Amino acid sequence: MEELYVLEYAVKDCMGSSVSENYLNFPNTKGATTAIRYDPAKFEQVLCTKGFHMDYVDNDYNCYKMLLDLVDMVTQKYPVEILDKDTAVVFGSFAPGAHLKKDFDAAFEAKQRRFSPTKLFMGNHDLMSAFISGKLKLEGINTSLNAACSSGMFNLHYATMLIQTGHCNMALVGNVDMTVLPSMQYYWQCTSAISTIDGGTCKPFDKSRDGFLQGEGGSLWLICNEETLIKKNLTPKAKIRAITSGAKVTSMTAHDKTCANQLSLIDKVYRMSGLSSKDMAFFNAHATSTPIGDDIEVDVFQKAFEDCDSPLVSFKGYIGHTMSACGLVESAYGLQAVKNKMLWGNHNLTDPLSDDPRLIVNPVTLNSNKFIKASFGFGGRTNIAIFENLQ
Image (cartoon, rainbow, N blue to C red; front, side):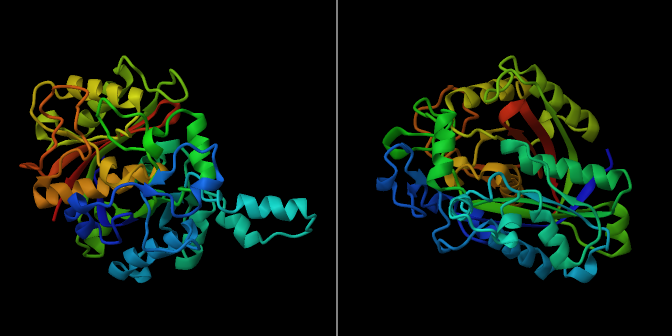
């Protein structure tokens, strides 16, 4: 495939608003804390009472405000004048309207004839991209794909295809989620995917894991093709060496236990990039801390990386599961890992589900500037990408 370039990527999550400082501070993560957006005592039916919070913002902060912050962070480096008029915007969220539902229902029950259209639009995951296009006065396509936990990476794949097929030369891609609310905790509880032990724990690849914990956060990336890079004399941070998506639906929550579908996509990105597992610094796992999902991902890893010693790491022990944004957030941290030539180990891993020494706990030195990122979403959605750091 035509290699595309990453000009800038911004992250905002429980660790802070500086992707470089956030990564270096991973060992100092506050981890999961008791819910701060609501009073857990008022919702006895909600058994998960914890999450990874952005405790430096107030309760009025929402997905729309995070969107604006991320746009400002990217345009500080690349002002609007740098962007082509037809720059695509592929940006969304899994459940941005969760905090608005109560207000909307109250207005409906009170028989109000009007409810703020601005609020309605803020609660629509697809229209978030339109806010960015309007703010930056762009005229290219704006939309978003909704692929559950893989949404961010599906957005990135779609944006690369838009560029590669000549629809545009540049794209802004991202996802945000502010979802640590009782309704969303209950939503995931009904799927048996969220952790409920002692209010919730997050231990990817650990035998005692019982589900994920939600994390607040988001990411925004600016990507372009080589022609634009040269024409505008821009300095990229990274390359997207290959990216692909697919799905094999065996259940709504669990992935292909045979690993055949996931392995075929990994083989595909190797063919597209001309690389192999031996070129990868590490496997950036999706692993959310669910009993079934983590097991399957270890199987995928061991079959795909049987001939090399690259480590397997999930970042969710540090930042939680940032839902639709997780793939892009964790890819940004993957780029920081290879940039710093140092990978932090799996956080909270005390009793590994496998004796594979590549399930690391302590930090290790990295000798490659490339890594592979896996994103496994509900509905069998799978995305595999290979990134190369250029800094």
